[in-house]
Every structure is written in C-alpha cells, then in structure tokens.
Image (cartoon, rainbow, N blue to C red; front, side, top):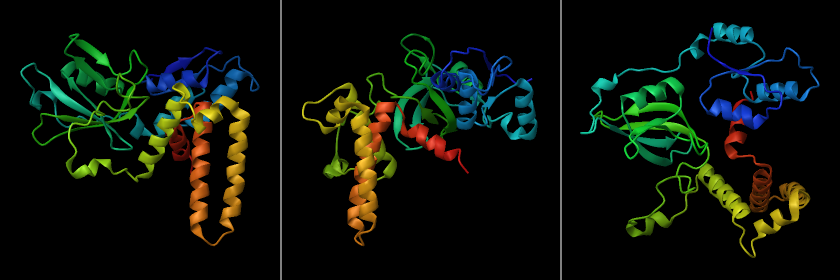
Length: 289
C-alpha cells in the first residue's frame, strides 16, 4: 500500500490541500464515506481533483489502481552517485545552491550533510544542515516557504550541488524573492538593463503590485485600485477587455500591444486581490490538454 495523507477534516479548505502537498505528501485521499455530492467537503474534493488530478483520490483503492496503471510514478528519485563519493569540506558538508526551476533565478545557498541529503530525497522537500544551530532544517518549516525538490545535480568536481526547486513564497528570510539582492559590482552598467524575459517581467510587476498592497504608497494608482475595492478592480478589468477588442480592429499592432499590457496589469491587480499567483496559473494551464 502506497503512503498517502488521509483527509477527513470536513472544514478543510483548498489552502489546506495545497499546504499538505507542498509539505511533502505525494498523495491525498479524501474520506468521502459520509459526504454528499452537494456538501462543501465533496466540492473541495472535486475542485482539488481538477487542480491536482495525479495527486487527489477518493479512496485508497483508487490510488492503488492509478499507481498500477502508472508505475513510473511509484519511484521518482534516481541516486546515481552515493553521498560517500561527494567531496566535502572540513566539516563534512557540501554546499547546495537552490535555483528556481522555472525562471532559473538563483535563490539561496546552504549546506547539506548526508542526513539532510537523504531526507531531501525521502521527503521531496529541500532539507539542509544549519551550521549555527547544529541541526537539520527543512526550508519553510517555520515560514511555510517550502522548497519542493525538482532535481539535484552535482558539478564536475563533485563538491557543489545544484538544486532546482519549486519555491513557495520568498526564499530569503528578509522577504526578498532571492537571497542575492545586494549588488556589489556592476561592469559597464550592464546590470541596469531590464530583462525582457516574459516570466521575469510578469513576476517583477506582480511582486511590485503585491508589495503595494502590503506597503501602500501615497499617490500610487495601484493603491487607488486596492482602496476602492473589488468592484473597482473588476470594472477596470472589464474596461480593458473592451479596449482590447476595439484595438484589435485597428490594423496597427502597436495599439493592441498597449491595451494588452494594460489588461495584464489590471489582471494582476485582481490576482493579488484574490490571492492568486502566477505559479497557480501556470499549474492550471499545464494541467489542461
């Protein structure tokens, strides 16, 4: 029988479901024995199944049937090189660099010993060795900002690990998305150029909007929208949709690019207001055929 989390709390929310999965559980089985189809718990199951079709099941039997049909999901960790072959420092540790698996952004660096390395493989959550506290620590165990392991790769000298991770929330304890945010040197001002990569642009704009909601700034149009509430935000989203339609009738593509940018900005304000992230949008799109 495969390991899974049995959800019996009828007061659970979708946030609870996500937290369980992001905490390292591979599967959730809903106990629907006494739940009617019109109950909130059954609706939560249906929505969760729609969002995580390969993670959510209505019975242990359904999970086992799924795994029997998809044997590739029963073991997804490959250990090609044993830890004993790694080149460790004088403290018996190896540095590990965490990188966002989607954007490629370097998030942080920490150290691993053999115990933390094995626990990472076992749980699927990045676990490190704290030199200051002399103990294991799973990233996010206190903040909730977990790092789900996507892959581990070792360099040619076998003395540094690169971890590609799915980061929940900011990686840095300061609240910054990455620990590497303090510039030391910029050659020829090349670092001043803004990235035009779509993921970086959308994420940066989203982060600014989210920051405005938490830290309002006088005279900010974004704060004007938040202050006027959901109806105002929805009105602007609707207006921008209409302007896209009008711009699309214009043979000049410049106008529609401008209106699409306006729409995406207001859509992101709506996303922040409703607590929806780009990661969730990407996940939803990836689950569609």
